[in-house]
Length: 148
Image (tube, rainbow, N blue to C red):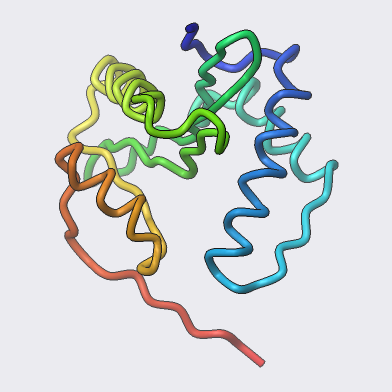
């Protein structure tokens, strides 16, 4: 098993997992999720080129999971934000997600952050339970209004 920051040669593996992730997300939300390879490529390139964004992958002969996020610094505080954490279906329940979360936390500590934040769908009970088991607490609710 290898955990490391994403590299250019990881694009195909990331793309495969991102498609799988979007299918899962679509089932969870009941919304049809459209994706564009160009948008995924742009997102991927940002992880490599932008200082405040990054992705970490976990490999076991192939890319089997990733965590993406960013470092946020403003006049009030510094924090890490997890955008996405995904493990391929065939590799779940094997502590891979926990390993990625530990690596993300290690990087954030090196950057001197005060906390790590994330958003999770209210009906994604598995994710909520995972984060709670890893010492995350609910601090506020995010709300949304669809515009017509």
